Image (spheres, rainbow, N blue to C red):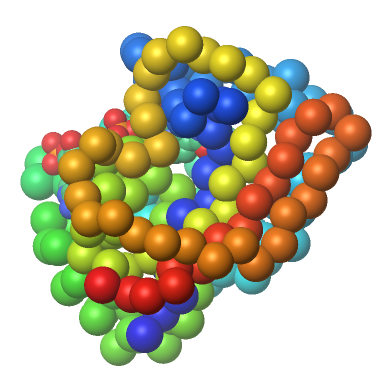
Length: 177
Ligand SMILES: NC(=O)c1ccc[n+]([C@@H]2O[C@H](COP(=O)([O-])OP(=O)(O)OC[C@H]3O[C@@H](n4cnc5c(N)ncnc54)[C@H](OP(=O)(O)O)[C@@H]3O)[C@@H](O)[C@H]2O)c1
């Protein structure tokens, strides 16, 4: 089965965005020379998976950020215009992962957001969690995952500590449900 990696940045208190979906708090960490392994990670995936809210936000960033990577947007809505290589799907995560497998896609980046990550987690489809814990406390917002779902115990694979206080944690599930 395709590897599904939830690669995400979270505040110390576990939020991926402010209550209104804002990610401006990440900007200070995106302007320097340090990329926290992003370029290497991005080169390693051959597909990108987005919830529709995250997709809508990505469209506001100017240039389409996932150009050249096959991308699936999970949505029950119609999308008359999509960037090249982007497919909108109303199918379940299980069905889409089966489609990835059938297309020979072996490694996909689950970008998020929380709602889509929760669907993948609850279906036992996430094979790796790469969480960059940012030295920021937001006090509220959109959590890494929604609060429902089974307990999942993880094994720490590696950690990287950066001079600016970012700590990147790589976990794999001990068991896949
Ligand atoms: N810090 C980070 O690294 C990071 C990374 C990614 C995202 N984010 C933030 O996360 C926020 C968005 O997260 P979110 O949780 O609100 O939304 P989301 O997961 O991006 O999108 C959720 C929407 O996707 C659609 N959808 C279709 N099939 C689904 C399924 N199986 N499971 C879940 N959703 C499905 C639904 O909308 P329709 O069917 O109506 O289209 C649903 O409301 C944004 O503010 C973004 O900035 C942060």
